[in-house]
Length: 259
Ligand SMILES: Nc1ncnc2c1ncn2[C@@H]1O[C@H](COP(=O)(O)OP(=O)(O)O)[C@@H](O)[C@H]1O
Ligand SMILES: [Mg+2]
Image (cartoon, rainbow, N blue to C red):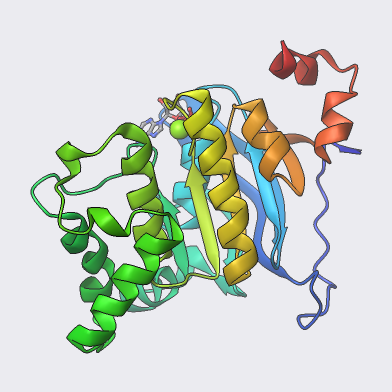
């Protein structure tokens, strides 16, 4: 288990399964005097699920917002598919976002739209030129993936918290992104529903060969979904390794997540 990782190898061949799809290097981000990320480093390889574990307020959402280009780091580099996100212009950022799915913590579904319209939204926003027939097929495929095809004409207010999360996941997946960023996918859900979401994350990763960053402090979610875990502490990647390494750690900063 590596501790206080500061070096990130760039010498990995692109065509191997270990080729990085996301490389976060020496990223700093502060708001006023609040130094949130201080030399944060992380690599996510193809078809890998990396869990970023961290306490509330530690900067997990800030990190994924930097990765998707919603926030700009003060310094450091974030490479996604080999492109430096903070140097992209608006059009190129939009293009790269079609390859990155983002599951927001609060789902971010539109209350005034049906499930179908919510799912169609990313297809229309990125206007990829699908026919209505193709749009319909994609909507149904996405809903079937999460077991909710029967909700297609329902309004969000008619759905339970777990169903809303699954609809939001279906919408995140509809463009078949290569990378998915999950912001606390199980927070606020009951334990049974939370485990269903873990299982869907794994199922869809296998089906579509996606790479993911999953942000959480739910240790069951970590255990079920993580190929690798990175602990965000004091703005840095304090430690990274397998779930089992964390579970067996005697480090008090790690043990507190298991209490
Ligand atoms: N847009 C913003 N402006 C100012 N401060 C922010 C902003 N976004 C996040 N922060 C601050 O950054 C810190 C980390 O926030 P966040 O990444 O949301 O934490 P979490 O790990 O719970 O997701 C917090 O102190 C928060 O108040
Ligand atoms: Mg957050």
